[in-house]
Length: 180
Length: 210
Image (cartoon, rainbow over all chains, first blue to last red; front, side):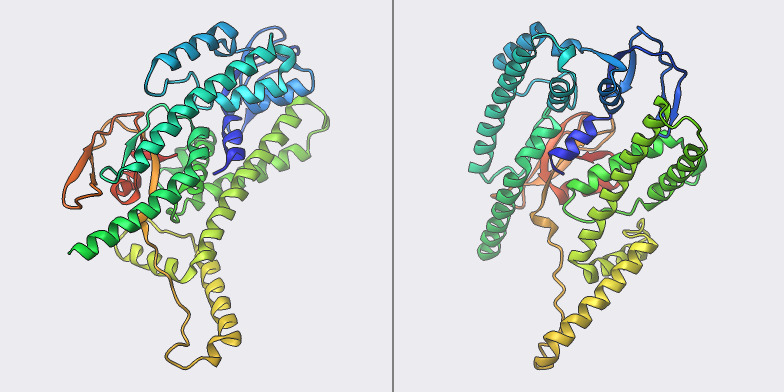
């Protein structure tokens, strides 16, 4: 698993676009899409949205959670909470990244949105980092509850964390086998 | 796989394939084979490909979305197969043994027929290379290809709980292996924990690797 796979998986998340063409529904293997009616919002997977947008066939109906006020609220809540906040989508950061990159004409105040998302990312990363350090400093507990963590955050921390806990486990096994 | 395979919609197959691929990409060991999903999807892809060949207007929006979907599915399948073959290449003899043991215990097959064939051929090729280069020059007592065994006891994984009726999971404590910590498993909980503690729930598809 790497960030490319995360991006790919985020491509299957649904977003709303407003097409500028009319067409019947499309029977894809992964499910039916549409029908598309010019001017009417329709839910499609992100990968379809990107393709249509590149061909100037639609504009994005920006999800509420990517609006500045909502992002500011999320950051406030994230600040107030000790644990990780539940984000509105499981692939929040990947989708945000794709929207900022591929739908930037449809996004108002794109630069500010980028800064706010970075802010939120940094706040969560700081929480994850400090709790990871706390976890690795002890050897009593082998498990940690990490509700609301995002797939991309797991992907980022996995390598070092797994390598470290593998070593901890080997040391513990040695310790117990010499004690007995 | 269930007996009522025919009742499953292609969309469900795609979703299952995505989960299988996702799990394989984060699992430290080879997971049970889901090659029936791959076969099913390849059939769908070939059929769609044939249909698309007959379409007159190749630039139509529908055609390009169909093509794009086929590319995405192909990518997913290729990546899934590569991940599995890479794991098999790392330790083919051990996995062949594990497969055999699993079958004897009536577990679902670890590898598909094709993967078994691949593992056999790879193991034979590897042994013959070792023999022609190194092992034939060694004293008989050392002339063996080592088969490292899999040590899953040191592995930990991220999981999310996908079902409502998962029993509490007992995780041994690090300082005293005789005492355990009980973890309540509620839907949508995410844990980082030792693989061996969660393996039974994982095999029942009650939790998902992240």
